[in-house]
Length: 305
Image (cartoon, rainbow, N blue to C red):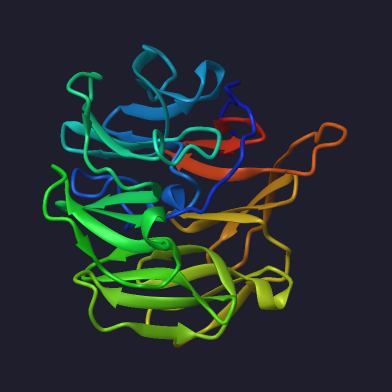
C-alpha cells in the first residue's frame, strides 16, 4: 500500500456537476470522473492543478510528489481543465453572485495572461478538443459551446441540463423531463437529440463507450450501460452519493465512507471513512482521481491503496 499524504480539503457547497471525455492529454481538459465531481483537481504531465481549500479555493499547482507548490491565481476555482499550455476554470464564488462570479477564465500554466472567455453565468464546464462546453444558468441551464479563445458561441439545446459528458461527436447529459432527471444525448452541434433510457440518474460518467451512473429509482444503486442504452446492468446495490470511474475501477461514496471496486462490481474495497462533525449533514463528495492520488471534499487527499 502506498503511503498516504495529508492534504486537507474542507467541505463546501456542491453545485451541479459536469464531465468531459475520459483522458488527460492536451485535447481533453480533465477526466470524465473528475469533471462530474466539480473538477477540483486535474493532472497534466508531472504536475497537479488543484483548488486549494486552505487559501480560499484558489488555483495552485504542484508536482505529483507534492513538492514545488505554486499559487496561480486569486480566483476561487473549480471545473479545472488543462489543455496544451493553458488552464481553464470557472471562478466559483461561494454565494449566489451570478453577476461577478461563475465565469469561464483561462490562464497560462504559470498563472500569467488571465483572460475571461464569456459573460454567461456558468455552473459547469469542460474542455474537449478545441471547444469548451458549458451549462448557461443565464439561459435556463441550457448547454452552450465556445472556442477555447471564447469565440463562436453556440446554443446547443433547450433542456435544463447537468452532468454534461462529451464523447466523440456526441454530448451525454442529464435533462429534466416532467420534473425527473433522465439521460439524453445530442451531437456536438446540438442536433439529433435522443433519450437513452427512463432511469432517474445522476453522477453521470461516460467512459470507454459505457455510461456509469447512480440510479435514483433504485435506492441510488450504481448502474452501467452502453452509450446507446443497451446492456443495462446493476453493478452495486450499495447506496451511492458520488462516483468517479477511473481506469478499471469505480470510486464512490456512501455518505461518509469512500469505497472502490472494479467496473464489473467485483473487488470491493473500503478506502477511508470521514468522521462527520456534529450537526453536519454531509459526507464525502467531489471525488477526484489524479495519478495515484484521490482528492475529495470532506476529508484528506491520499494515495490510492
